[in-house]
Image 1 (cartoon, helix red, strand yellow):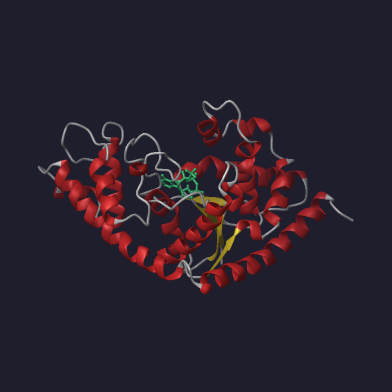
Image 2: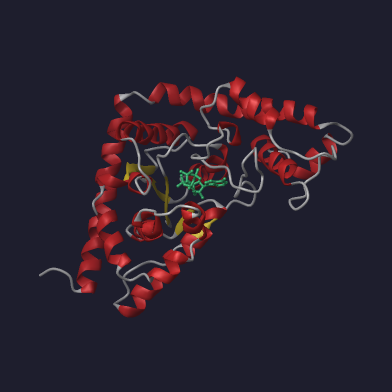
Length: 326
Ligand code: AQP
């Protein structure tokens, strides 16, 4: 069985972009792959976090994994900082990465843009992401499109180490959804939907109340020509809403374009509110059941134990191949 690894940062509530771009794949893949799903809390601290809120967000993301259908009997679910190998391998890979390739990362450029000074972690976190993946001899990494460059870096680092030392790492492949791989912000369809954007109406979080979902969708940026048609270049707002509608309803974009021929944005948006609200209701319900349960903690503790067993084997091989230790 091929091994799958992916993670989400506990930096806020998971939104439709995270769900449609990455998490939906988690559930599909667990049926016939060995899956390892992580809550990457060490990535979250690349920007300052409130410690109390961070702890809450870690459990929120874990509960959301389960609420969307990740099954701990089929997949390992754990928190990154519970397995020491991530930070250790992150350091070792930092010594194999070049600063030039890290400064070229578009996410670093976007997140550091306009800031006088940023933490070094913001520059080097793609290396930690590479460590997360390589630590588990991962074959497949299901992620959103925005992570393509980071997957390429992971592959480059694995190949570089394998060429410099003995064969040490499995070279992984990214797995991207055909639809939903990049969900855009509702208030600005030129930037991706993000947990940390200031405007709460830029995103729909999986735990949003129906009234908030309605408000965010009805306010979503469209255009002035009133035609419901998929055209990313000229109609990015409408195209984004069509993508969300299509993935959540199972209808094709072409069918939706036909269904809404001659109708206005108001009707289209009202129907989308129903589609999104109905899709998220069972997730929210399951989340409420599990979020404060003992079971959640037990699942995470068991997951960390199982992940650590795999990680320890990789780290022994890495230390041996690099000549570290005695
Ligand atoms: N807008 C998006 N469309 C599709 N996929 C997305 N992902 C993120 N945004 C979109 C995918 O979700 C997974 C988890 O992402 P993350 O939490 O690790 O960090 P991120 O990519 O930085 O997501 P955010 O929401 O934008 O967080 P903040 O605001 O904290 O930086 C990844 O697979 C990602 O591709």
